Length: 496
Image 1 (cartoon, rainbow, N blue to C red):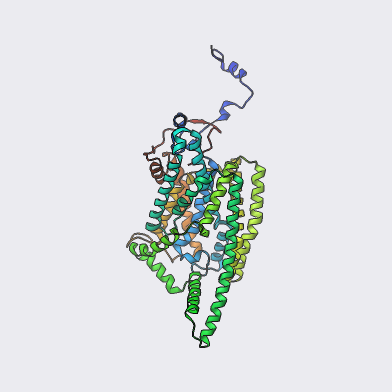
Image 2: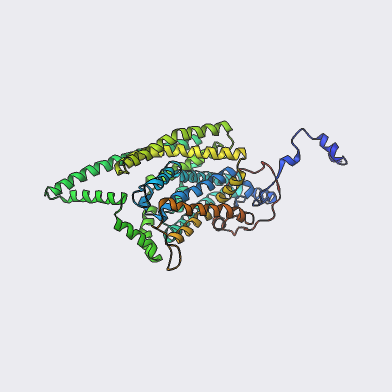
């Protein structure tokens, strides 16, 4: 007779150790979670690589990814509604007094760069988990994980090229896929080494930005002298003429003249052909940047921090409440003054290019600290189980980040550019800065509602399904089966 056979429920219960009731250990999976433990066991036993199941995801990372994705739209919307230069210099377009200036300041202090930083951290952590998940399975899975990882990111680069050239010039998929090629060999580095490398990159980025400020100051002083020489009737040498033209080009990039702004609006709102002609050289310039270019260092440094933090158990929420509370206090306590100093000086000097560029050096370390503050607060909320009505929705948005990101581009391109007569809103240049955020709010509401509904019926977002099918070179099952009960806390830490 097996233990417990023939006993009443009360007698059987008396033989159990003193633990929480079974009902407290079992929770019903959210409607969008597929309970398929048998299938997972089969895959792991067979040593096969496959996309991560919903029950294996690290919820904190999905919430952070969703939060960052929605936050990124706060910055990207400016590139659809206004000229590119208006993002950093509100004097260009969209208004820079009153509510418009306030929106610029709040955006720069709380969101600008921080959302991309969190997104990059999630990308780095996800890459590390994908690799180690395959390596731990052993057999063919361990041998084939390199092929899967590189194929995954080469496809991401291709998606990025299509996105950049055909839809929107601000694509980040191509640089992410490109930088991911470096992450595979770096997975073996210790968390300490990864943080040192990232820290050095961020320090050098800040120094480069400050140095560029002094360079702009020198260029302007030289240009002023050349202007004085011209006024005095002196003939400039070819070298002096080139220096003057270089400065004039810098001035135009910082504060474009009205005729250039009007041409910019016209190129993007006339028809799809003129959009392509305008967009292609911008995308080509962005995609050809070498690995040491500072903007790619920006992404790579936070990818490495993400890899380090997943190794240290920070992103998975394994640290104490006290740890995250102190991280938030330190992040905000040091980050707010540093970033605010950059914003304050920019406004006080009426967005003078020399002052703004010089003070941008404080922005880089301040951005890092601010990002850690945001991350710590979100993980604290997740650990405490607070605001589940919102964090569940953010997690769904994060789980469908690829689809939602491209949706931003398609919807905003239709609204602001228009692709043909009577197709699209052609709103570019018609809204003030603060009014652009009405569009952002509408997209947020839509994705926070639709993403959870979609994941109640499907395993992936549409583009996630396509990407995974191409990565594993096998059509992936899309529809969910009926969700069943899962043991609370049994999810194996893994991510896509």
